Length: 153
Image (cartoon, rainbow, N blue to C red; front, side, top):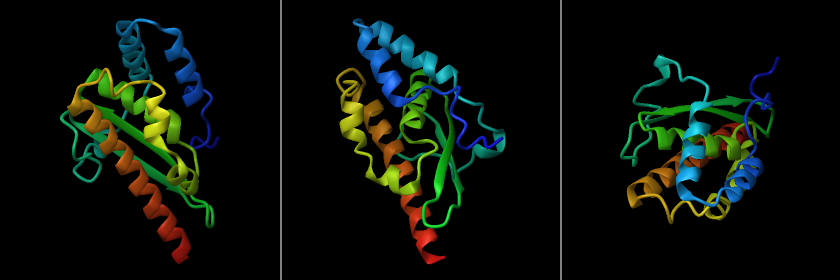
């Protein structure tokens, strides 16, 4: 089975957004985000390294990117973890937005607009918001690198 594109167990971003909108109370939304983080696939200890560590996050955050070459349209899948429960949830939201997509699709996603629909920045500390954007930049950079590599071959 191709685990890269097997997203049956993972929620889609639109489903997360719909669930989020059903929750009126921010305490419930925080609990939901934390619950999403609990559903992340465990990150192998070997992937908790300096290369995968995301700079610009107050918490410890690791993102591991797997690129599946597919001619000029490589697909990316991600694994990640954090030492903070809420950040693990934010990672899960980003993975719902990005994982299994082509590098070109990832570069084309307007993450601030998509995430803005959740009104997260209004309820996260500035440090957490900055960390979330650092993760977005990292994912985009990995997608851009995969595109560059694909066009060279």
